[in-house]
Amino acid sequence: MKWALLSVWDKTGIIDFAQDLILQKYNIMSSGGTGKELSLAGIKFTEVSSYTGFPEMMDGRVKTLHPKVHGGLLGRQQIDDAVMAKYGINRIDLLIVNLYPFEQMAGRNLSLEAMTEYIDIGGPAMIRAAAKNYKNVAVVVNPSDYPIVGHAIRDGGISLELRLSLAKKAFARTAAYDAAISNYLFGINEHFPSTLTVQFNHGRGLRYGENPHQEASVYGDKGIAGVEPVQGKQMSYNNYLDVNAGVALLREFEEPAAVIVKHNNPCGVAVGNDLLDAYITAREVDPASSYGSVVCLNRQIGEKEAEEINSTFVEVVISPSLTKEARKVMAKKENMRVLILPQKCESDEIRTIDGGVLVQRTPPYREHWNVITDRDPTPDEMHAIQLAWKVCKHTKSNTIIFADQKHTLGIGAGQMSRVDSAKIAIDKARTSLNGSVMASDAFLPFPDTLEIAAEAGATAIVQPGGSIRDQEVIDAANRLHLAMIFTGIRYFRH
Image 1 (spheres, rainbow, N blue to C red):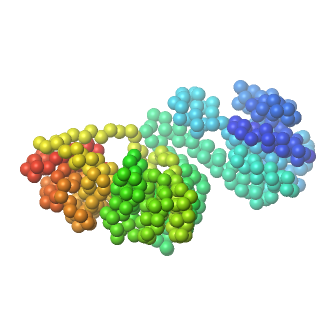
Image 2: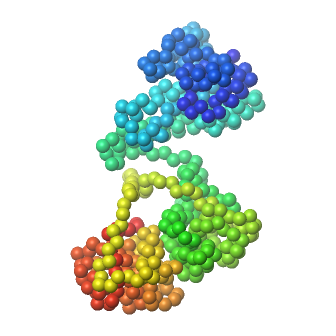
Image 3: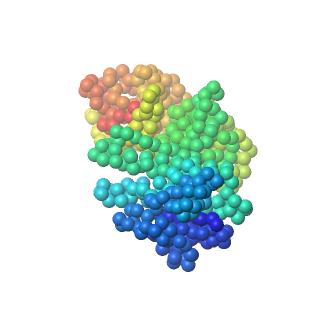
């Protein structure tokens, strides 16, 4: 006689699964809310309290915490048979449990007293017991696994391989659950918890890391971490980094836009009347760097855009969608990775350092733009400034960006000297910088960068401000008839 114990908060699919178990000659044991659902569906089951001889008590806090339950989950065939028989313990062959929704309730600003009522005790205890004894008990913690378990039962039984797989998921679930509770409690009256526990799932090995001698894997099932190609080769470690950087910048734009990334920095950014216009313009900012790049687009790719992308070597393309015609065109480049742009996933930034991690959070904030020169920017200059500033926010420091109203003209990134970044940006420009604007990710400590920009043809500047020599820089801008805006927000990216 086989027994299945059902105790779930999330009732998704439980009735159909229970009916399937009945057909496969399982006896069902249940209690509480799950028992009520089974009763309403006309499914016969044994009450846990009837089996244990103890009623549910303490407002349901104690239901399954009993030796006859945990003995049934922990009992080993042939080893514990005698003691189980002595104490009338039924072997539980299948445990179906999911937990109180602590993670969901943690975001609802409930009191600590209210939150503690969503800390499941009996569920995790049963899950851990069954997972430890996986050779004798199969444990299911996710409704998405009901079909595969049901199929296995109908096909002759749950294999040891599947039992072990289910046990891994079970321990991962209790670990994540405990982590959520720990982080919540440690976070009371603290902006960041003094002890931080994190878990990422959906791990997939990558061919190698940043270089072939390094090993790598990606974890996560949401956002950029969760995307996988609908066409092309497996994503690489560097591909994920570049896509993540490019999409973060792409999301700054509402109009048709193209962001082309190489080595975690934009090498061409443009907006246009349509996507094709934006892409071609962005690519022509720096054609040499665009070779072998990651292309990020914020509109559906059609046949014309696909043909244009195919005309050069591109590593990865990501966009919200593709037409059928575009898919056919892009399939000709069978190694080119094509991704569908996912929904943004808000989370803290976590970076490893020797012995630990750095955690960064960006709360809602406002920039305070202030024209601090004698001359205001013209409307054209203001449009260009807005584009340049968006790009500046997502480029490695020190950053200098030259741009017009439609696209970047020169990008200088990742230099120890801001002057060097400006010189590189000027050198990278393929067209005249006359009438352009310049953006700097941090304040200009001296007038030199501004003077270099003006000499190259820039007529307006945007920077955070905040230097002890701000007035000296402002005076230089006025002397050169430049318009300059302070934003009040710095954007270092290391």
